Image (cartoon, rainbow, N blue to C red; front, top):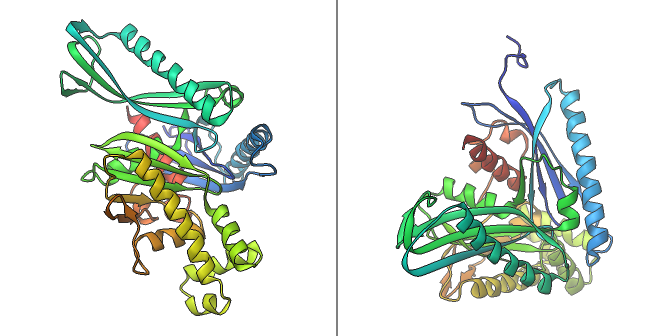
Length: 385
């Protein structure tokens, strides 16, 4: 039987990971009883002509998605894959998707029944409130729910897997809802198997890979924005973002050192491979360290606001750029000054390629791209349900 025999039950899918200035698309083969297999993976730059002009930025992103989809299909054909491309999965970071985690509490004097109508009424009320908050913060008027998930439920104080059809006097529902601007939601394929937040995929991956760690922070540094996820007791407690990332750090170091941004980026790459002497000769180590330290302070402030009663001590980060690796190393205390979450030093865990090789077939052929790999692992769990 040939590798691509018609009797094969595998399905070819496209998994998109869309960030502020970068898009990754992977073609993946899913087959029951086997781990997902990466067939291709490619990064695309999203032109950021005017990052503060949301409409222009969105148009550039959507054009890049179309280009990436065509390119992925072409690459499959060139490598001899003849099967039809089935499901498409879309995972977004800021600024395309905003997510909110919230615990909804309902308490009454007498037992009440919980059915689909009850859940819909409760969730719709919360979503309306969340949309109003997003409008005030972002300046974008029209939002649409593209993802809604009940992470955990408790009846009368006890965790319950399925609450439909049950009665209680006290109900708590941990929800995770993702919103996208209507202009984006309308352009996404209606048949997409999944449209939602990349942070939820990261949460799922970390919980599966580190089941013993139930309280943690996940840091997702992108080009212009850093997204942050706080997890308590295994469930999402809060999400946030702040306007700084890899490019902002490079720009800051460029200004401080009076060196071109391209030269600073090259210096960061030199620093990553351990050539400290060359970096010192260029007199750019201190400006780069200072720029990363400023980003760390913004991160610490964001975490403090998310976790007013104290932050988890474990911090996960999945670097995808040279400056991301630089920051992860600095946060781990490589230079004697570890990152502090709350009132003490954090245990910084870097998610590297080794975490994906055992979970995803052919992952070693596509080094880097941790985001899309976490998304692929999440897709596998979605398909198994």
